[in-house]
Image (cartoon, rainbow, N blue to C red; front, side):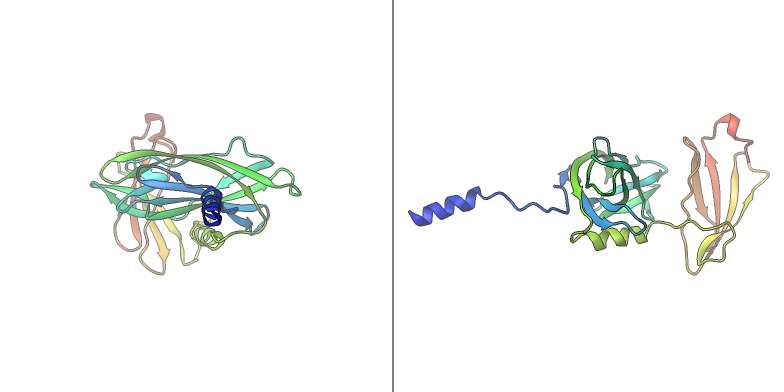
Amino acid sequence: MKKLIVALCLLTTPAFADEFASPWSKSLKSEARLISGGNAPLGGLLAGIEIHLAPNTLTYWRNPGEAGVPPIFNFEGSENLQTAKVLYPAPSLLSEGGVMAYGYEDKVIFPVLVTPQDAAKPVTLKYKLDYATCEKICVPAKADGELLLQKQGGSSQADIQAALARVPKPAAFGDSKPLAILSLTRIADATTPTFDVMVTASEAADLFAEGPDAVYLAVQKSDERHFTVKAQDVPADMKTAQ
């Protein structure tokens, strides 16, 4: 009888919950969750939205490339939240059925810089995420959850910091840093806005270009330091803009 009572107690014990991570939201080809990163380097709190992808599956950067859907983040309903700024680690250039996509494979963490309304009170961060996962076909995915953010980070803190280190840093035009835009020249006789871009880099580099909404910037690599950037689907009133 004593053994039976012990067994019943074990069966009814609630599963261990990670106080530094929300439960996984599972989709067909992926799963996502919210994780805590403790104090942010420049004040406020640091969180992350982590996505794990099935093999041979990708998801997209904020500019998806020739095709695809960027992730959409929503933090409505959070408690004691002033702002939540999502940061995007540098993507990879991925071939997707003959077109080039900007995105991530395997897994990605999007760091989130969280500013409380009242720094003396805790923040309960609630998130909703709409994103796409693509293998042979693209499948829409959703995730949601909430987490009480703490000043101490959990086991994922180092992973968030690593993702934060991969977020591109601003560089002045013509800067002599290891990676920067050295020159940008518009090609005068092109029928649509086209530019020659020269970069300074200590090794082979990729260029990811973002334009105004509804304008896709196609990037072609000329050599290790030169790229041609061509605007596509440009509205008529923008074709002569500098």
